[in-house]
Amino acid sequence: MGLALRKEKHYTYADYLQWPDETRYELIDGEAFLMSPAPLVEHQEVAGEVYYQLRNQLDGQPCRPYIAPVDVRLPRKDEADAAIDTVVQPDILVVCDPRKIDRRGVRGAPDWVLEVLSPSTAAHDQIAKRRTYERAGVREYWLVHPGDRTLTVYLLDNGQYGRPEIYELKDATPIGVLPGVSIAWDALVARLPKPEY
Image (cartoon, rainbow, N blue to C red; front, top):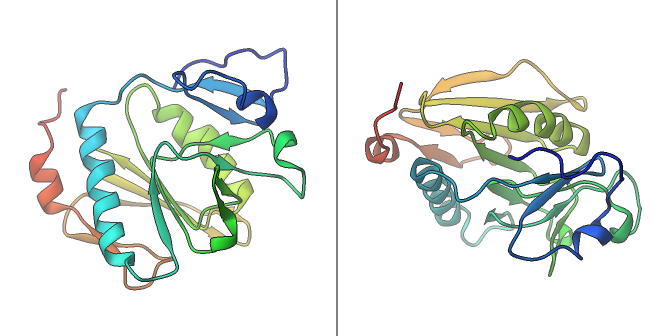
């Protein structure tokens, strides 16, 4: 995740739609952040495998998984799309309310979000995006750290994320807000490159 594009201007979704397609940004509270260049292979392995497992498990159900890049517009109230100042692109997300899905992506909080951490995005995902997802009402937020082979899980309770649960990437981890759905880790972890320390 790059540094903010500019801090002196408050950007909205209307500005965002005018930017060139070949350069990806996220907006958080009106501040534009340049997305990182192509992610590392382990990032793609994790994102692709988790999406694949979700797609298979949710087939025929109302909940729909998506993989980045998909714009998720997070309005604070009922503002028009052009006025929204927070637009993110989670690595993986699940939306169970079809009314939130339109041709441009998702408007409103997904039910579940996963971000794959990398050195360039870790602080942004763990701090700014965690706060953003909490405020928006994302019911469950997962952070996967491929290098450390760990998973951090935040669950929304009374509008706030409590203390996270930390798991090793082994066996399977159930998704709390999606009954009967879990992510199996062993085969995926076996394919990941060895961590570089």
